[in-house]
Amino acid sequence: METTSIIPVTLTDGAIVEIRRLMAADGFDHSQKLRIGVKGGGCSGMTYVLGFDMPADNDNHFDIAGIACIMDKGHELYLFGMQVDWQDGLNNRGFTFKNPNASNTCGCGTSFAV
Image (tube, rainbow, N blue to C red; front, side):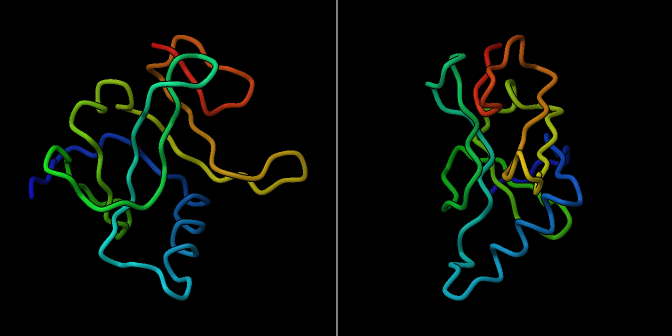
């Protein structure tokens, strides 16, 4: 397991509270880590990935406020400096992404281009 000394992304206090709430659910598999990444697709070319997953050989491991996180080493280029937030308002509910590397984003807020 490789651990990176630099944390590539940040989680707001709201995101940390929501992620901990999800991790406290009955039946949560604590062998999984929080995967932050990207995948091809979406209306702008790439879509954010945020979910629990098993670590893979090509992952960097880091910790944010006691939450074990993993990210494919190749994804840091697209996500370094990104902030993940949790919105719980009347119009928006869910995780949001503020990515300084995105040259273009779409209206849904989960897709971007670099």
